[in-house]
Image (cartoon, rainbow, N blue to C red):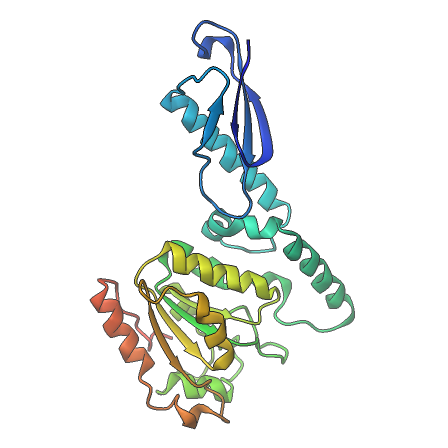
Length: 279
């Protein structure tokens, strides 16, 4: 007699254990359900025979769930998305909004110049594991000239000279280029809030806020500050000022000392400080 044990989620896999794995013979049919709205494991299970599962069986169920999630996510994962990001927020790639918008962007690329290139839209996720992010700088929109945008907010590809807003950000003598990749490698997430898929950036900020502790969020400009409303300010540090454009930097960005303040906050949280001059 088969026992049916259900994790009440969206159906992803069906598996029948061999009779040797079941007390008294017979087989057990597992219907694993996956919730695409969160990453929580299925904890509430209902058994027709009220049978206790072994640790090995529970482990196998979780493995099946994760494998099903990975298969679903891989169908829509864009080019070059970091593995840890796929693992933690891969469910976003399966949602209707993401599939629809990525299809729209693909069509737009056939008719117009869209920046950055498809390979670089999620470049920021390849430089640092999501669990190792310690600073988040929310930009607004990518640079719109050829050879500039490459998936990191405020950063431009070498050998392009740094644009005015970048020079306002750095505030010290830069090495003659505008590439901020070295910041990203140290755990600084340079995220454009008006990314190709805007809802996706909201999901990223929300995941970071809920799952990590002691992050420093730098919100420059009103748009980034609106995006930051979901941040749990009891768990994280939030620094706000004007956007570093030539038009508004003098209204608050100059003299805000966000870089030195960030390092002090990181030190307080027991995290390694950022070498902002390592460019």
